[in-house]
Image (tube, rainbow, N blue to C red):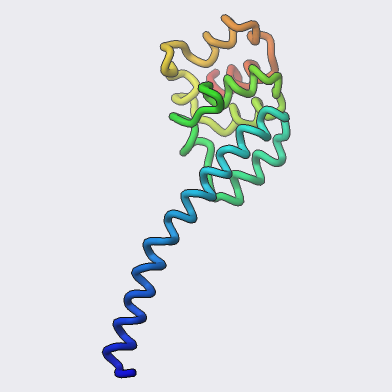
Length: 131
């Protein structure tokens, strides 16, 4: 096999692996996000944290636009009475994220009050971050 043929073969292998790797990474990120929803519903803060860390994800980076069954992650946590995990999530988000209206026009605190979660530990953590 000539040097040119070897070079072309190596170049083709690198090109194929460069195309293949992002698809695999996207799949693992998708699985991690699905797991975050599941672990949040189970109120398993440790597994949420570990899943995010292993996937090299930050809550601040993924929170906006990320949904579990059509709800933001904090709404999902409150809906499932997963307040330990909800507190963890609230503490990782910026004030601007916590005060910004979501797609239905309500902030997370307005939604919590309207849905009977106003006195929850998650709401207390959100208020602590905002004030």
